[in-house]
Length: 212
Image (cartoon, rainbow, N blue to C red; front, side, top):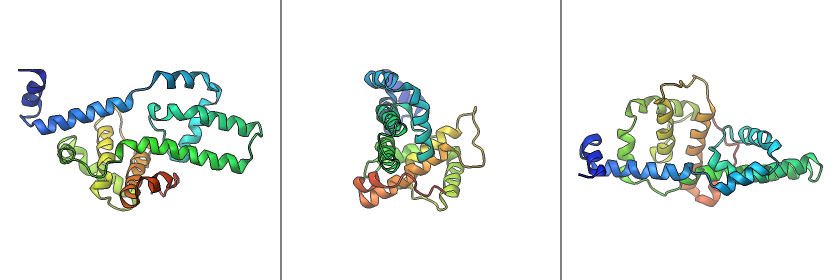
């Protein structure tokens, strides 16, 4: 018996479809977390003294910091933009316009993995089977900060991500909204626009969407 069948039999009670869904999700997550060497090199050599300032601007505008592998390809340009503004090479209005456009690009890159038109049935099965004890708490929290209960086709990925956070025994989410909540809300809001109006409209949507 190979490792795959043994895992299906032992950990998934013979449910091969659920195993394949989890396995595919793990591979996709691994690919998303992979950081390109070229990006690391450019990041280390391009205005590194502006790294924290750039990330502070990303967090101020988005309400959270995307994972490093999402931000790294776009940070050098952001740092150059900051330096040009500080050196009076561009006017304040031009700087703010370019900053907003670039922050949108970073937000859109973070949303890229959530742009399928419909989730596969196996993903819904995984939703009902993975970290299920945290399901109500996550949905209640998301509903509270959104101000309405989202449709599952909009919130599934956001809820799964928040369940993983809640399942971490070393960290307890406070009652007030956090950057993790804001990222989850952004996932929901972006997907709502994406499914209603298409990717181009979602990509152009404001990064300052009402969060709660």
